[in-house]
Each structure stands twice: as structure tokens, then as C-alpha cells.
Length: 306
Image 1 (cartoon, one colour):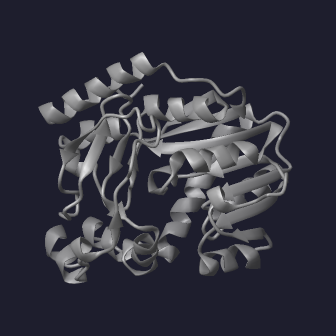
Image 2: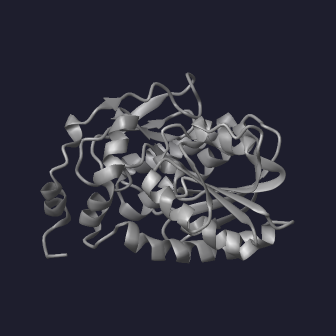
């Protein structure tokens, strides 16, 4: 790309975020009506007027208002890839990300292998796009891969590679009692419109002796690196999770954490096993939330990467 600034390149896209259809997030997706959201930012990293809330009771961050499902459909169909390309100053599209996804998948397979006993014979990738990650893991473990994604064009690529494909969203998919040995939600949870419903659906699709893998972009780490909450906020992420809020979601839907990793880019990944649904430690979450809000107010102190 040329020597123009990120702001200039974004402006050239002509995307009028303010004019797009939006809806409020009626309540905290983790706490429900008991949540106590407060506004922490009115602008995202791209310069768009986006209101970021953080729940004082649990620490979950979320945009409100946010694009409607239709608005996000339009955004991902023609705006998302050009926008991130403009922001980073390099081409990022379905072609360039496939090599990155292969690297990610190889590293993920190596991380998962010690925890997956017995090895999975079936893999379901929720939001699996063209099936690159599912394909690498299926080959590694000798498994059959299924890709669940709302994009027909991307599913066509996975189907041509010999994978089973399902068009739609996890929270709307009826598997008719079918379960998979390994269920994946890779670098997707922050993009969801309903985290709790998606994880609940995943839990129902995970075999009794199976596992799941979910990774989050840890907002504590991003905040520590960028120095301001505006550097963490972006219109393509309706939700902002921390290690604490991720663990609370897992407990509520009935997943136990059995392994964890932290990537260089701030993604925190969790290997999960089916367990009993339990209430999170709400007082501890409140302490974590106040710490996050204090960091936001202070302009973010560096966060140790444990």
C-alpha cells in the first residue's frame, strides 16, 4: 500500500458506520438483567463512533448500540476485509488469510494433541470459513471434519475439499442429537452476537468424552499493549472478553478448562471438557471488573502475560 495514513485509507472506503442499522444490547450477555454496564469509550480504533460498555458486575465488554444481524451481514460481505487492510496498510483477504490459518492450525494441533485422549474421530468447526483449520486438524487426527458457517461461498471451498458443510449459525443449528468429539470456535467468539447462546449450543454438540477449543482476544492484554481502550474497541467485535469472563461463560454452560495457552497476538485459548454447569464466582468477577475499569481510566497499565 501507499504512504497514506490509516485514517486516510479508512476514509477512502466511504463506509458510513453512523448510518448503518443498529440495535441496543439489551443486557449483559453474562450477567443478564443483574448487569451494571457503564460506558468506557465512544470511538473505536478505526475512528468510528462506537459506544463500548463494560459491565461493572462481571467485566464483560460489549458494544451498544451495535450493528444488527443484517448490518453485520453487509459489513462482512464487503467492508470487513478492506477495512482491516486499510487499517494495517497491507492486503488482507480470503487468499492471504489462508496461509495464516494453516500456520495457526498447525500450532493449534500441536497444542491440542496432549489433551485429546482418545484422539477425536469427528471435528466440528463453528464459524469455520473455508475449512482450513478443520482440514488441518482432521488430517492430523485422522478425523472427519464438519464446517458450520453462514457464508455459502466459503462453505463451497470446504465442501470442494471433501468436508461436510452446514450453512448457518451455531445458536440456530439443530443437530438432532448429533455430537462431535472436538468442537472448535477459533478466533470467532468476539464476533458473535450472542456468546452465551453459542457456547450453550456448542456444549450440546460436544460428545460426553469429547473436547472443545475456544480462544478469545483478551481485552486486558490488548489494553495493556495499546495504552487506551480505543485501541481495543472495534466495530467488528460486539464482545470483549477477559480470562475471568471467559471462565465464567464456560462454567455457566457446563465446560471445565483442562488446558490453556497464550499466543503472541493476545489470543488466549482454552481446551474444554464437558462438566456440570455451575454459577461463576460473582464477587471475584466484580473485583476483576473493577480492575479492568481502573485500567481503562488510568490509560491502561501493562498487564503481565501469565
